[in-house]
Length: 458
Ligand SMILES: Nc1ncnc2c1ncn2[C@@H]1O[C@H](COP(=O)(O)OP(=O)(O)OP(=O)(O)O)[C@@H](O)[C@H]1O
Ligand SMILES: [Zn+2]
Image 1 (cartoon, rainbow, N blue to C red):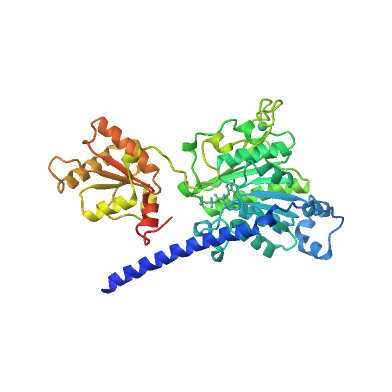
Image 2: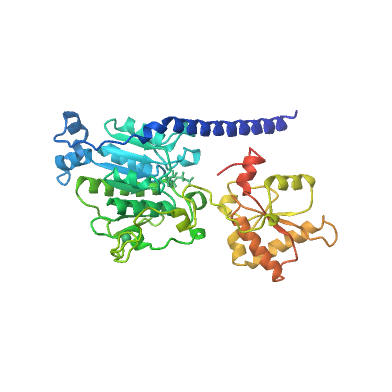
């Protein structure tokens, strides 16, 4: 075998073994979770009152004890306070880290997910060796190393309408560190029903925001957002990207608010929203509307008297990370396996990659023409010219008069469907030659998972 071929063969084998290892780790995590089942269900007793700090505690917390605003009284309150952390990701990790190091008595950690390598730049409680492990177990282990006096209660499960109220009632303060709209409504309603303050933050790209809901007569999440946004307008970190340090800043601010509430100092952002723009280095605080008397959750005649089906209410999933759109019919789509067969057959066609340039810079299929979806959406003349030229060139190898098929690909198979719709409308408007357009289901990540193990996943 030529050296180059051997390298390629070995690379493919390494990729295959890595995929097998990753799947084994996932199964191990699931088995560990199943093993943990009975322990999770044991109710936690209330934390006992604490009258004085020990010598070790005085030494350990000395730098914050000498703050007159906190003092021994505040520290004792922290030691008997409990905080429920919903989501042990980019926000939950720094939040839990600072709450544990400051000496909060008990931390409840809820997350259904396992640690992945792409989590590590921002989910700072998890390490390489714990990839594939349940996030809550990894986080609890890190926190115990940090402060063995803090009690960590891992709940390796999704927070659902069936469990949320019971869990929220067991804690004094709740921090929403989740990443999806149904969970935000669920946590809010559970906090309103249980009478708990909610420290809520979010971060995406270079921006973040934080506020405190349902504190001392302040508004709840539903007062500010009575209706969920259309599901297709919501972007998550996997699609939009996020800089780890931005979630770090917001998670720390969340920890600060939770600490101040727990220590009896009161929060700063009840009824106001702090916005952080990391690119410009700006913090801006805006006033939120006050509590709505007609709020469905916290209003005078609430209609939310029980937890509901939040996925149906929001039209999106609370646990499915990669939202899959269904814009096209099955005939308008091909699988990666079918596309690979077509490619191997040498049949003339055009592969159109509609990802943003920044993603094409990460990896690409060399034979694809690249036109970002945004350019197609604004009918960019230069891009349409490029497409027309590529089609004319591609047709040279095709049969006389036959339309050149276009296959559209993106990262996950959502944007490619939108692009197919646009190309169909251009054809209908005769701005493009009559053509057959299909999208590649699952996009380049399906290609990496099923066809080419050496293709990068991101
Ligand atoms: N209903 C829920 N119950 C429990 N955990 C939740 C729920 N909704 C979201 N989460 C968790 O909240 C965390 C959000 O953190 P973050 O978005 O940083 O992580 P991620 O989803 O792993 O990231 P990425 O989008 O890059 O894959 C995730 O760990 C997710 O599993
Ligand atoms: Zn409300």
